[in-house]
Length: 459
Image (cartoon, rainbow, N blue to C red; front, top):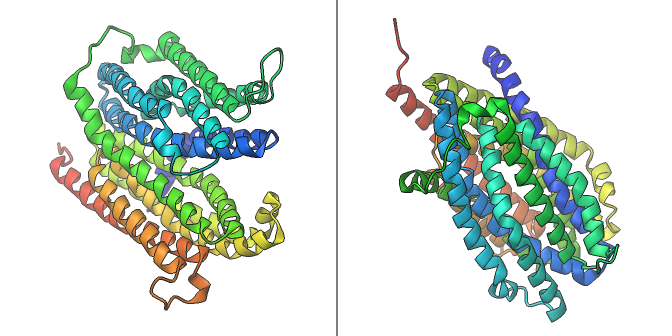
C-alpha cells in the first residue's frame, strides 16, 4: 500500500492543486458579492440571498449533467482516441445549449420560486431582476463547463484555474461599478452582481475557446476541425450519465438548503451559528472535492487505457490519502475552533451556539472525504445511477429526516445535547457515513467486475 501511495499520490496532487485554487476562486465570487452588497442595503442583501439560492440550486443540477463529459473524455484520452474527444465536446456544447434554454426559461419566470419566501415586494423585485439578468450569462457558463470538463479529462486543469483567478480579479471592479454606480452608470445594488457575473462568464468562455483554438497541443483533439450536427446517440449517452450526476448535485444542495430552513425555526442566533459553521464546511469541502476530481480523471484515463487494476489501485490510494488528510484537518479545526470562530466576529450568543457545532464539522470530515472520493471514483467508471439513489436515501432520508426528528425532539426521548442544530448536524454526519459505506461497497464491486471483464494480457 505504501508503494502505491508513493506512486499515486503525487499524480493526484499535481492535478488537485490547480483544481483547489480554482474552486476557492469561484467560492470567492459569492463572498465578494455578499460583502459588497452588505454595504449597500439590507433589502439588496436579502434579495441577493434569495436570488443566489435559486440560481445555484438550478445551476448546479444543470452543470452536473454537462460534467458527464469528463469521464467520457477521460476514458477516450486514456485510450488515445483523441479525435473522438473533439466530437464529444461539440455534442456537449449542443447539450449545454438545450440546458441553457431550460435554465433561462426558469430564471426569466421565477415568480413561483420567489413566492415560497413570501418576502416584501421590494426584496422580491430585486431578486427577480437578479435572476433575469444572470439568466443571460447561462449559455456562456454552461459552454464553459464543457471546456472545464475537457481540461480536467486531459489533465490540464491549470489552464482553467488561471482563467478563474483572472475572472476573480475582474469581478471586484465590475461589482463596484454596477452595485454602487460610477461614470454615468446608475447604482443597481444586488442585481449589479448578476451583471458583473454575466460579463465575467462570457469573457471566461471566449478566452477558453480561443485558447483551445490557438493552442498547438489542442490540435490532436480536433475541437474545431469541422461542423457537427446534433448526434442523438452521443447526446443521449451524455444525458444518461449526466442526469444522475446532476440530480446527485441537486440532492446535496437541497439537503443543506432545507437543513438551513428547518434550523431557521429554532431562532435567529441558531441560524446564524449554523451559517457560520456551514460556510466554513463549504470551504473545507473544496479540499476533498479537488482531490476527488483529480482521482476521477486518473481512474477514467486508466479505464480507457485498458488498465482496470491500476484504476482500482488509484481509487484505493485516494480513499486512504484523502481520508487521512481530512482527519488531520478535522483535528486541526477542533483545536483551532475559537480562533476560526473569531474570524467571523459573531455576537457572544451566536458564538455560544456555534462552538458545539465545531465538534460535528470536525467529526464529519472523515465521512465527507470518503463519500465524495468514492462518488467521483465511480464517475470515472461512468457509474452514476446507483450513487444518485444512495445520496437520495442517505442525505434526504437519514440526513434531513433524521435531523428533523432529533432537532425538534419529535419522539420526545431525544437527549437535550443532540436537540436543535446539534441534532441536524449529527444526522447529517450519519447520512454521510451511510453514503460513504454504500459508495465504497459499490466501488469495490464495480472494480472487481471491470477486472473480470478486462483480464491482464499475458505473453
